[in-house]
Image 1: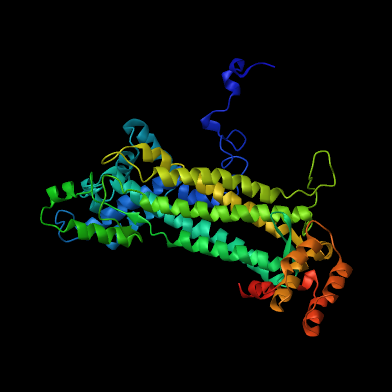
Image 2: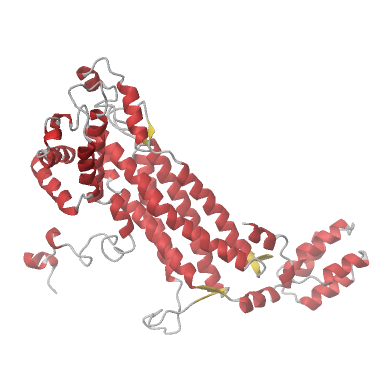
Length: 470
């Protein structure tokens, strides 16, 4: 076999003919369809479109301000034309801007030049072209673009998918609220629960995680090169720029940050990425628990025609969806934790290390979305196996040592714990043996009758109520 260095250059895929098969990232290859919903918010073309949107919103805001006397208000027709540039922004437009960037070697300046060229035919705007990017540093445009990208990806893609997982788990909690299940603490048989209650636990945890993600206020700024409105005041010394810029940022649906350097310090991004990583950790716990329940036979998986579980073992139906979800959470959280730690740190008034890091937001949320999709796919295949659940409960009557001990304690029987330990620890006991022990106890007849009627399947406490209540 020839080494790669001897391959002819024309056999090597290039960026000009990128396909799903030669993509370096599985997000643009194997899993491209699953993450498609994020492209409208987090791709390179999306970033360019958001920048165009911010530049034009700024121009419109300046034109509507009477104090900016040199810039006349735009007519409704011109405002509509500006809005169409954003609404109809295409990949072809993004490519044109990238072509300009090849000369400028500056991505935001390329936006400014493209806008001036695109608007040159509009007489009303043409006399105002120099107000495009007025008093702005690139980070005024970038921070607002990334803020909107994240806020809208969160609202339109990520939270709805997380809500789907929560809804499916809630349905499982209600459906199986009374279906008794042997618990395992330290991997050993423990006090029974219900299958529904175990699903309800994750519903509660994911709801809290969701609220944390949704609750992070995304901040923005548009205050110039070092955050002091230097250029703004040089051009219009008497104007209240801070109030104007606050209204502009809040008008975009963001929270205004009055104290920044050249960059908005990304503290909110750090909080948001940390919140997403926290939710992913809960999902990871769910993936592993469901994997284990499938392994125990508590859940069966619905078969898909034509699907193969193993290249050599034809009987296998593997829990691959939960494994896929787990693997993607690992990649996602590595990126999310790095972004949460790195982005709020910048040398003095600005360094550029955040710029390349920010371009990986799509990767971090892409792998998170893949984890959501895989988990949902796995949840859709689950089918409870009541017979296996009942079998496991009936094989572990020793779990009733706990309620028997508590009744003994209530009625003053000495050394209750020690007596049950001698009876059960490390020993398999059945219904007859524990019934025989109960009959020997010096406790009231009513208490004895209650214990004799108890089975592992009936010893589930408030599990069913808790599951129904979620």
